[in-house]
Length: 278
Image 1 (cartoon, rainbow, N blue to C red):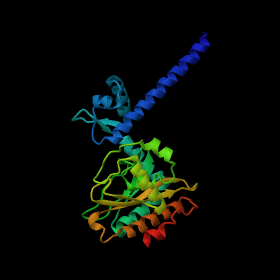
Image 2 (cartoon, rainbow, N blue to C red):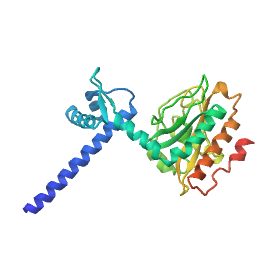
Image 3 (cartoon, rainbow, N blue to C red):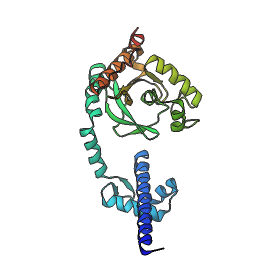
Image 4 (spheres, helix red, strand yellow):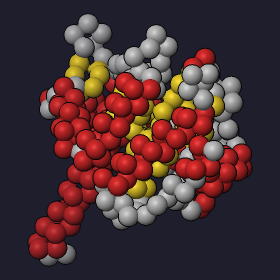
């Protein structure tokens, strides 16, 4: 091997190590996003199957950049201010969020619904934006919060244009985690529900993610007529008398349609609107 070959091989080796370190750092951040509160080095190492030495080095680097921060009281780590700043920048610059927020606010303020915008984040759904109803009883979520796909209305709606094989690869064959009384925990049950939802034009989640909460969601399409997000409206069962499911479906589908149009979608995927309101 010539000196030139050794130099090239050394550069490749360094690139592989750098890529591996980046991948591990992202796994650490994803863990902090999924687990609320603080985590210690050994707990992170155990959850990710990495050595404490490697995790300590990664966390020290992330803390130095303010992506993570160390508690002076517990000595454990939590999400740092840099991620908060990036999150605010995401909201300010994301067309989807800015277009959707007026619709979410309208549903919350005018109709007393807890409205959410959901986007796919790996094998989870992320609340990209939310507007809470001004009510003593409401369904409260935080933007950036992750939740399951199979147990949520906006999770089901995001699957509307996916092939079955991709859904299976994304969610696995089950059984899925039971989040509430009526969670669909099997792949077959979820796909049966999804086929009905596609025909209807909107997805329903009735005590599947939170006991006693009823939610409806519809997909949002972009300028290429691809589903990029979904919008949902949720109410406690006790509120269904004043906001029946038919009205909830009409409001949700209408909001999804207007958001899609503002994003440049030219298709009319809301043919089920008349069915939902009849």
